[in-house]
Image 1: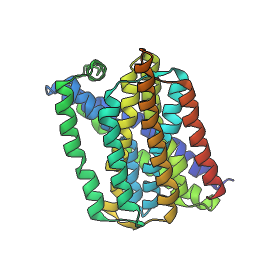
Image 2 (image 1 turned 180 degrees about the vertical axis):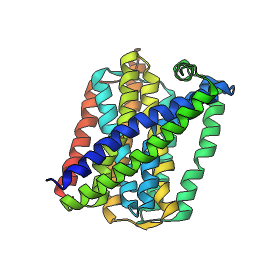
Image 3 (image 1 turned 135 degrees about the vertical axis):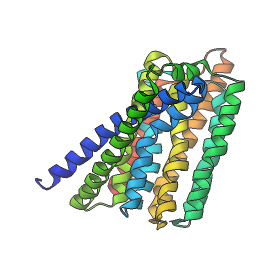
Length: 327
């Protein structure tokens, strides 16, 4: 057990450092962008959204460079599972989440399409450099289209999120950006090292550690953001954070190991983990569509109810049972 203590400490300090570093990274970059005249709407849709996925992205880069690409893939898929099952499930239990129609018309179809594309790339048991590049390059047109559309149909909550950035000088903003980036890099180093040591200690694969310990840990920013948004009544942000984060996990995190060090994947990555993620995504989109239909039928605000939250948490728990049983 003594040999496990340093690794566990590395994971704990790494996760805490990632949380703090992501917060400072977003504050600094958003503060600088605000000083350069970028609108609060654009800041909320781009910098704040990408910033919550910064831990996953930095960890994926670090893992791929250390020949732990399986951990990076597990982190991407596991984070999406955690975001839907754990983060959104728990958030709905805190308070039923009102739903807006645009989620089923815009974000939902895009997430399903990207999920299908990712599955098409990994079904052959490999992730190549061209496939990784296609995924990461899709971020650009998606951001451009999103910003263009949201400017024409602004969401007050997204604008408010961008306007909530504390005032700071450009020099201070750049300093916080650099400090946050440094904290992300150092923390990811500690987390990846600790996770690899834990995997070796227990004799489990780096993929499993990526799907569980690393995925849940790097999903903490999404959980904090979604829970606080729900408590404050910023419901669009709570759901938007999940959709945005899951998109970035597939485009900016899953792509990393393919670009840096193309790898062969265990068959379980597709047939167990990817299919579980796809199933959870379909359940979420289906629950949103059902809730919107019920709300329209009964002439009331559509909500993700506590029952749906409990269902998502239960499905996530069943996935963990499958991991434990080695299904």
